[in-house]
Image (cartoon, rainbow over all chains, first blue to last red; front, side, top):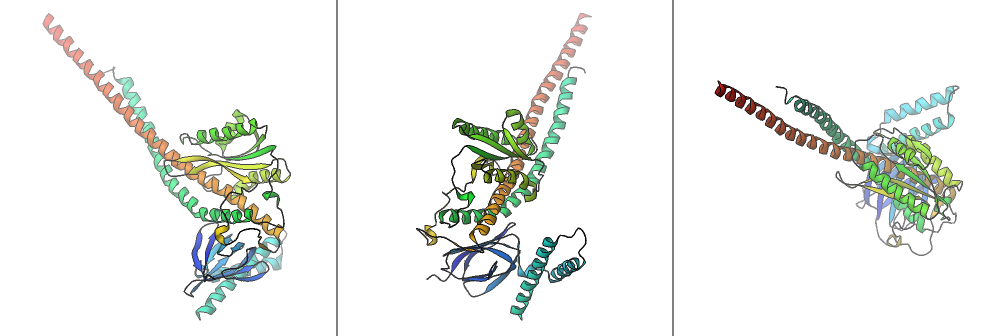
Length: 140
Length: 290
């Protein structure tokens, strides 16, 4: 069995990674997924959350995606993100601020308040913070 | 000296026109770079989603989505992507020629055609040419967003879902390089099956994906995203084509103006010289008569 597989991570704006990986870990709609070479064909939607790529040499990189699709065929993984960022580029204070802001809106609930939109924004902010925390934990 | 007055005026006005065309050339060149960057940055997504859809078309889904089904063709839809402004050479004309040829072929087979047009040039053309235009989107500007286009695309997708049209194509200019833009007709729906093969991926025969959360939801979301991304990509690509074509057209216009000015300057000098010669010979003739 091959040790690595092709992996492509693209967002609507750019291509973030394209090459060989050992494992892909992503937050699927029904729970977290770890994909290794030889995985059965799979298509899933993604929740806002972290995506971790483990490269050939064992090093890894963390991304944040705001949602999208993951396609798996035995030798290739394709991740189509709506928007994606490298974890290093995430701004923690901005994420925390966004979370506070949405929570405040949820608490106030004014007339023109769009509940589903706020819920999505909250989920994204929380996911961002989760990615940042994961990154920090690994560095420590 | 009255003789050269008209020619001098003409040279002056050509010079002004040349200033305008060379300015437009420079503007188009800088816009083209930006448009090309935008095209390059959205292309990976479009390519990847095309791959995924290509695999999907080879799978044997338990759930047969409307977009994957071939139907008997009675009426087809075309989404025509054109520019908003003119002065870009034969870009739109070539595109419309291609579109009209494709539509003629459909008519020949007794198939009716619906049109959705993006860009005011296509709207103007098909209004005078004739054609059943069911949706339009104009003035998308230099930085189109998916939201600008979604309306007219939605009309076509609804028509497809309700069974009014049985096939959907998109017609746009493909950016080959700065000098070459190729009009292209691409089938959007139902999904064309010929894209790629899955055998090199280690799968052949009868297979299907595992779908999470379920086939209907995933396929629906994925296919809609696919159509959006393709239409968006074609609009962005058409924009890069527009700027490239305009740059080339304006360069040609500037060069032609220069040539014209040289020719006129020659005629002007000849006329001036002839007038001077005539004057001298008149004076000499007059002096000799005394």
